[in-house]
Amino acid sequence: MVPAFRQSPGRTRRRRAHQALKSTHTTLCPNCGGSKRPHTACASCGYVRPGLQVKVKKPADA
Image (cartoon, rainbow, N blue to C red; front, side):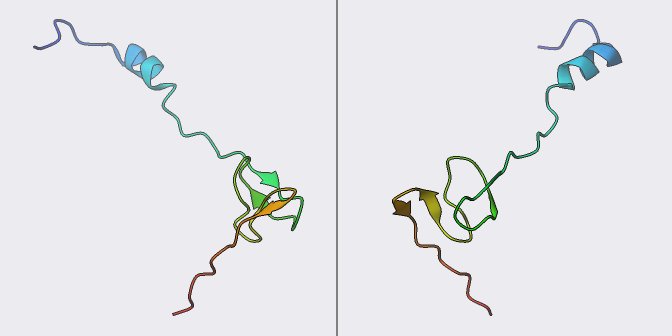
């Protein structure tokens, strides 16, 4: 199937107006003060919530 009529440039741009990349929202870690995404473990200290901390693997320096 082929479209019967060509879409105008304005209509194409209006359709693509919602496809822009959004910046990631970050919050400050209450444990170490580093930036982290909400509802995730901190990449530097592993803090999740009070009473829960995840062990963070450090990348091997090669």
